[in-house]
Image (cartoon, one colour):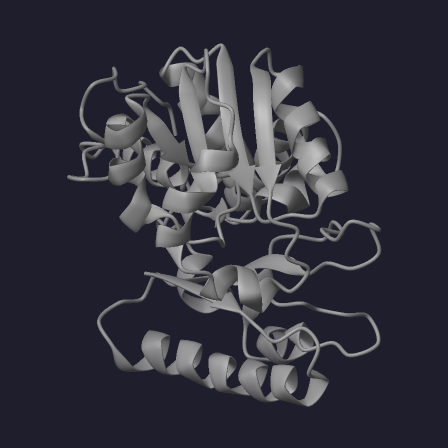
Length: 277
């Protein structure tokens, strides 16, 4: 079972309360049900001066990430927790995935490969054969699966961060024709944004000559209800980082990567990658 989280950032007291509730919920899931393989993944907004992860470690959880994930490389906001009691004895745990695209891309060009390699080493050291992936890597692999050479994208980030994402993608050999950024500074606002607004936003995006349109480069910004409608309107294969992440997960799990109404990448048009665990 995969339990994804996003704890409060600005309200420290609320974050502590959420962490306590999350720790109790995770322990109840493991102790009280048939599901014994649980991974807790997401943005804990952990800060050195106000730590909450020790609470989980006291209950037998192990954090798998020790590298900073914020833009100033000072805090480990994003993490991955496994229960050492039930998952550290040879049990196969679900597939670990780091879901924040910019947390990876901000660390340097091609950094998703290093992250995936290092996390895989940690997972193997804890006696698990679960595959490891990142949303940043999933976006790159998804575009390459589609044979994309030139793309246009939309993102909720501020312009400097959007330019960083563009540079990262272009370093992978894919030209970004145009990018539209919504410059939303509040993460909560990003998550609450109506995905159907993308149908209007795309009118500002230059898609001439694009092989693929990335409707949302950010996993947190909702886009699924708009993906197929954008693709049908534009006549261009349309994806999001979240769509690419789902595709990559399904491939790793050796499941058919097909989801109706989710755009070309999940429509069964492209060959399935053969991945080794």
